Amino acid sequence: MQLSKTTLKTPVGDLTAIASEHGLVALSYLPETACVSAYIQPIYPKPAFGTKFRQNLDITRIWLAEYFKSNFEGLIYPAFDLYGNQLAVAAWKKLLSIPSGKTQSYSELAKTLGKPNAARAIGRIMSQNPIAILLPCHRVIGANGTLTGYGGGLERKIWLLRHEGVLGVT
Image (cartoon, rainbow, N blue to C red; front, side, top):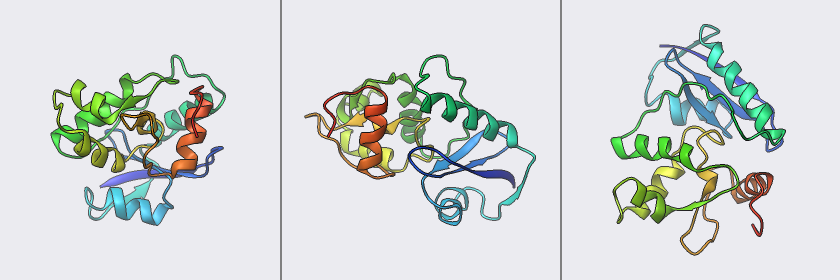
């Protein structure tokens, strides 16, 4: 399978971005080799990289540039090429309904998906989110308001939430 990849520089560190013909497959804090192992090879066992699908990478670059300028409204998202079970894909897509500057608990997210008893499953799914920042799992917090794990580390989660104007985040 032909894919395109790039490294994007951001205020919270480098992000490895990988796109297929269908959309953005991964946007990860992991270095390129680790990102390919974690997110790409399970889907595309023998990926080939080129420049054919750069459009979604270019849209991602523009989205991130605007986001880090605090332009949160009207951002144009790239297409996403998500792989996972039905609940995982639904949960990742549902993240797009949490506006910047707002948070939602794992249990609230589970309820919106019609799975009110699946807060722990949602937590596991968030830990496997292949597309950092754009699919904003950093906006998902514990039911009591605590910040729980984040694939990019809690310090990045705090930075992102503060950047979006969520006050009182420690």
